[in-house]
Image (cartoon, rainbow, N blue to C red; front, side, top):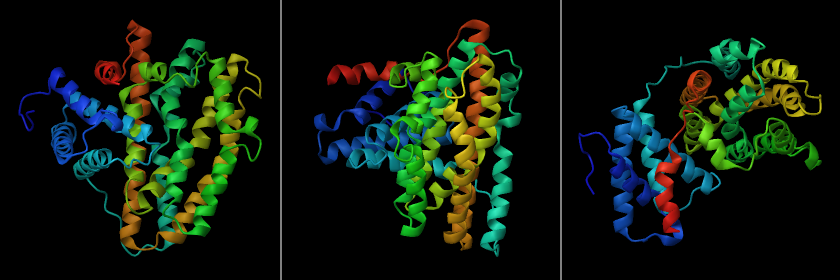
Amino acid sequence: MSVNSPLPLTETRAREYYRTLMTPANRRRTDITHLSACKEIAEELGRRAFLDRERTAWELVQIIEWRIQRRACYRPISPADVLVLSILYEMENRSIPEIEVPAGRSPETFCQELRDHVMRFSATESRLMKVIASGELELEDWRYLAYQWISSTIDFTRAIAVASLPLPRPQARLLIENLYDEAGRGDWSRSHYVQLRNLLTLLEIDIEDEAQMLAWTVPEVLALVNTQNRLLWQPGPEGALGALYLVEQLIPTEMTEIRRHLATLDFSPEDLSYLDEHMAVDIRHSEEWLGIIADLIREHEAQRLVFNAAVQQGRAQRAAWDAAYEGWRKWKEGGEVVHLPFERYEEEVEDDR
């Protein structure tokens, strides 16, 4: 195995790296040799992806990060998985310039500035939203766009649960109540998962068909999920608070626009209940997240971490919207579907099982 090569990452080498990192835990060697190999591979891929900006390596890293987190339900405990994610996340962290946050801000002033800055990342004026607002989208267009939103939606409850873990009990209680809303407040038929599943069924999408979702999702959309997971990986609560507050703050205005134009397909109010629910409850949720930040994030260093986390999540979110627009445009013009090449790497791992 050759690492730190100045040559571009070849497909053969990429397959070898993926096979080593993604071998199922019950088939791995647990000795130091395997961990050493994982460390070297992660360091090389991180350098190529985040320092050298090599697209092939970046795409492979997105696949690896997403797969490791998802198969472990966002709480990886395997030593190799923890090592790989820690290396990749740290190398990406080092590649991102930080925004200076003025010192001496009261919690109230900081929260107001955070709220104002977060709204700059709203997609309501994006190119994709303008296409949506044109009123010219047909069912197949909405199906394409829905695929772009699934990966950041289906596991959001797990992100909330993980974010609650380092919080004191009074603040964690608010996130548990948020999860209760997600679960339909005792009525599973009103849970957000069921509402989303019903809406996707009308768009002829099977919410359980992961392979189909990945075949349509543009790379930057999964990178958005990976950004959120990286910020949740921080040992303290700051990364999660910044990232998830941004999501909750932007959802109501963005979903209002989407619902208004999706309604032109003659869906019933019940069909659109998933959107209606989020347009209502996420206004309250965003205020609760901001209240948690006001309660806990009082020191300058903590404010810096929260602010930068929100900015990183916001930039990733706008990049995902822009990439979804470009992906939709290419698909409409020539039938090309831009997505991460999961199948290129995973067939060999499947054969090994």
